[in-house]
Length: 126
Image 1 (cartoon, rainbow, N blue to C red):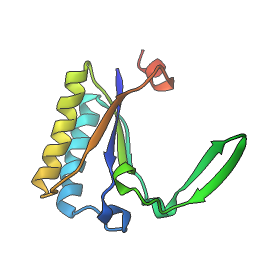
Image 2 (cartoon, rainbow, N blue to C red):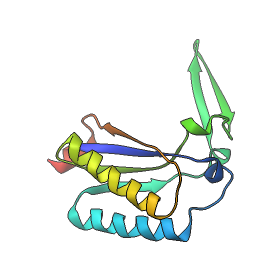
Image 3 (cartoon, helix red, strand yellow):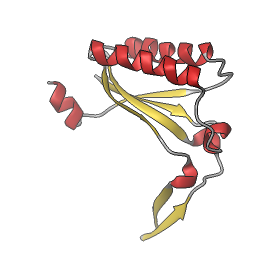
Image 4 (cartoon, rainbow, N blue to C red):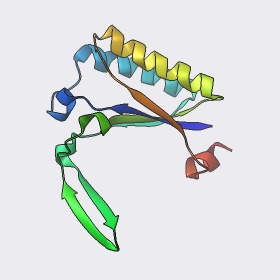
């Protein structure tokens, strides 16, 4: 099954500060491992919300709002789509990502995990 893992943005990330070289190196190594094992489907970082926009449908009308967006705790800084045999395996994979963050002295972060519905990715894996 494919799982999307979304890492929350931090205030520093939203301010445009890049991740530390130590974190980037650790994540590059882990990503390479997941690619070689066949677990990595896709991954990427997102630009700060100041470079984004939101399109909202409400009461039949649409509005476009330019970033930045005020609630950092609700913003996504990056994502990965991983192939995992079970929920437990997906959690174990995310724990390895958090280990890299802890090793790079990141004090706090959060990763949301969600299974993907049947999609083009799921069809390609069959």
